Each structure stands twice: as structure tokens, then as C-alpha cells.
Length: 173
Image 1 (cartoon, rainbow, N blue to C red):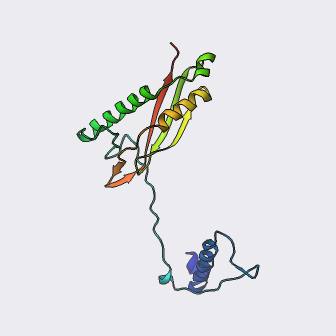
Image 2 (cartoon, rainbow, N blue to C red; image 1 turned 120 degrees about the vertical axis):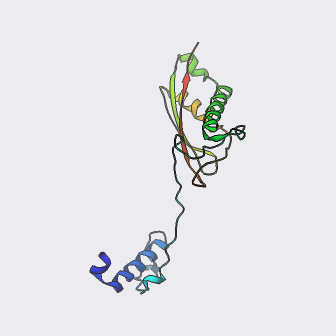
Image 3 (tube, rainbow, N blue to C red; image 1 turned 120 degrees about the horizontal axis):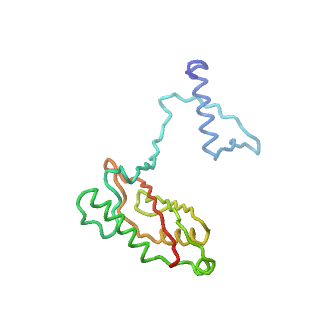
């Protein structure tokens, strides 16, 4: 629509100037210390449009093939793999769990909610925590950061990012 209003030639010039501007990191091209104008006319057919791979995020509950935690490879079907994944995450938390000494002394307890992403390479990233105290949040982050690499989740035959959330309960007994 804009192209029709300003004309084909002006449109191409505008696109060429814009591409030259972005090609140098958003800075105007310089000639002897001064900005220079690039007036290059290009045919629309000569402009290459690159396709960028977009990281797709698919929720754990609806993904076609969930990420496979090491040791869950023999599970049959997605439901069994989900159950195995959840069981192994719980086992990992129990194994790695260490109550922060200073939190014990201060009597700090509560539930820390942890959200993280299993990226398209099967690595845990983007760990976010929310809890009653920074000491507990830091421990929850440490536990989740120590998760092993997994086989990534798959959607329509492609590796995708899969978000996952889990609460970690800190109780003093």
C-alpha cells in the first residue's frame, strides 16, 4: 500500500537506504567522517529476503514428543515419557537438595516456584524462581541448573523449546 503511494522507484531507494543503514549496525554509513547518502536503485526481484529460524516454544502438556530425561529412553509413548520425566526431575531434586544453612538458622521455609526452559538442544536455560526468600530461591536455582542435558522435545519433527514449571517445598522438620 505504501509502495503504491510513493512509487516503485522511491520504494526501492528507501529499502536500499534502510538495508545499508542496518548493515553497519544501525549507524549511517560514513564517508570521510560525514554521513553519506546511498542512492542505489535496486529491482525488487534483486532484494534477498533471508529466512530466520524462529525458536518455537511448545508447552510440556501439549507437545507431541516430550523431552527425554536420561534414563527414560525405554519408556513407550508420550504419556509414559511424561511420567518418567516428572519422576526423574523429582528424584534429581531430592538427590541434589541441600537446605541452606543460614536459612535453617533463621527458620526460613516455604515453597519456591521454579520455571525453566529446555531448549532445542536439550539444555536447561532461562531458570526463574519465586519464593519467600532469596536463600531458598538461590538453592532452587542451583538444583535446576544441575539438571543433565536431555533429548529435546519434538513438535512436527523439529526440536523445540519446552517450558516446565515445578514447585520445590523447603520444610524444616
